[in-house]
View 1 (cartoon, rainbow, N blue to C red):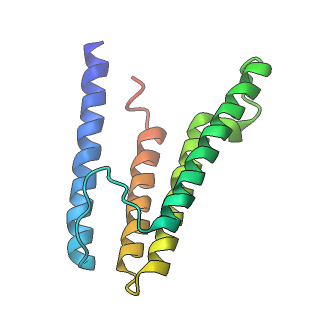
View 2 (spheres, rainbow, N blue to C red):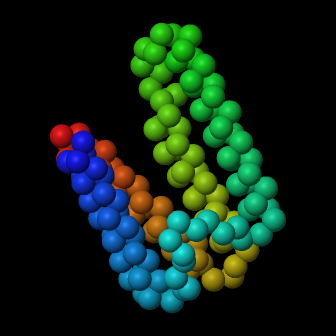
Length: 137
């Protein structure tokens, strides 16, 4: 139990350090204001409405996936209805939506590029985490 707790703590610390370093370097290189850790500010009202729609859609699809899994005795024939896939898909879509709205709202594209870079580094870190066997044993 203690070993698992230490591994989880180590993974969280490494993720936090990686994200903090990314934000420092990327914001300095692009010349944009550094974002807060785990903040998701809305750009305008259109962004807020679209983001709310994506949140509700994610929730509905997660519930539908759970119901289908219960009806099929938890067989994993529907890989696209697995919770981790749904959350990852809507994470990407949500950040792409934010980048699109930033590109439309601002004349400067640096914020949009920063959002896309932030999405890419998060996906890279999560892919490294889930493809390694470090956290299992």
